[in-house]
Length: 394
Image 1: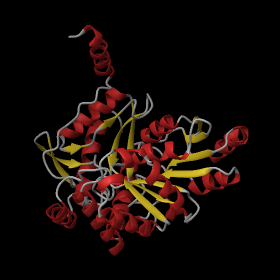
Image 2: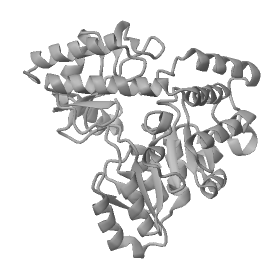
Image 3: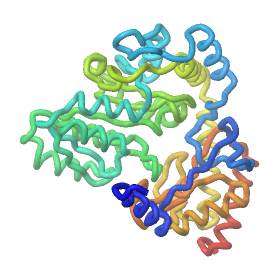
Image 4: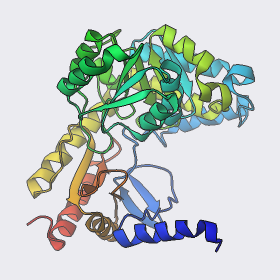
């Protein structure tokens, strides 16, 4: 081993010793309520496939048709020769679905945040960021060079305090929050955050990655959930969760969207979404506009599973969404719990530091509309068995 890289081996060993090493399993099947994981059939409680669209036959068919027409690769960035009629149509449809002036798509939700934050603020400005915001917001904020001021999680009063103390020192201020926090499953009080941002003339940005397809009328997201249409400047989202495909979207004020077409670096310097992905996303929009059946089923499953887990005595934290954290505390315990669940044919991965704070390790269950009541009952039985055997519940 090269001496200059020896430190990496030492750090990996430290992760293994502390129970924080992430052993990545391999999927051998399409996404769905059940997966084949490392060759074993298991109930899927891990994927962000909220509406079960990742292997929906209509999305698969749309993707195949698009490949036949447009080929497999975009061969260019959007700003040179990579923008197709499909991209334009998807952006129009997403804007209409979300009730905003305009939208722009990116290769991923992560890329969307990396594009947006540095385009809107710079080194002389400030970003007021919820302390539990997603890594893509943290990285995008750092790339912007702006002063990063964190406020207490989901605390509009602390945000107001921070803005009152610092806003006058910066030409531009941007307030940014996750809509649904992916580790805890709680929802940002966006109506109160909007009022504070408005008071201090700050740009308001929300990352609705886990809210699109989940919250609001027929899955239209957190802005619709709070009735804030036309008031939130920037909505960032992903097409890889409820929409079942891959890609990112920024929606909102048309001036912001036009500026991102000129200065959003992932838009300018990374190849466009593929034809297959774009077509599948369009079909997902079609399904969401046609019916609320899948969104309704998702919430029916969520209410049932949460109620039963609470009845069994598990701590499911502060979640109010389909994201259901099973709070266990120590990473070693969470990893052992996950392994024991897998022995019961339930795939639910442990999450520890740095994904969540130290001492707050958990199993995160992701409920889907694809789950049947029998699936949920089988999962509950496994959680009860493992929880009792490990002394987590009585």
